[in-house]
Length: 192
Image 1 (cartoon, helix red, strand yellow):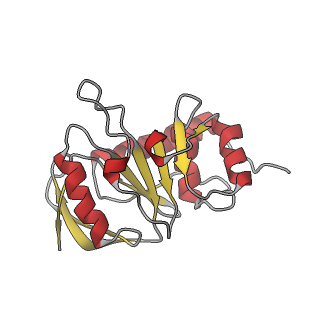
Image 2: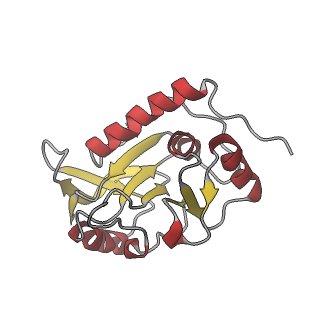
């Protein structure tokens, strides 16, 4: 088996991608174009591959329910990530497009002294829109409308519970084929 390559310039490309991911979390619900897209292994969108190559390393674990074995091998080879056995054990939780988002309360939420020890959920979506919620809170100059094809009304109800646990809770990154949007736990949403 021959593994696909990762970024052409691994350090430089990961740094550029990391800046976009940070900007996406600093300006929630505003999809930003990813600057570099690596060849994506089976079962991942190119945008997801870029985000995973940027965020994963040997210090963290990833849970994904149904990634192909070749894709798990690709991730381990290029990032050194450990694969978590259960969704509750993942530092990062990947939900591929079409999969059900787990209950956010079932994921690592951090501890009172260390709220940063929570999970980050990466959700693939076919498209972004402006038709589901209006968000406000830190990072918003004005309320912003948002939607993602992968998110249901039940997800947004679950998001309210996650938001209410602040400073505990999880943060989300929504990723399309070529863009990323952040949804930090500080974001308040109202359904449209």
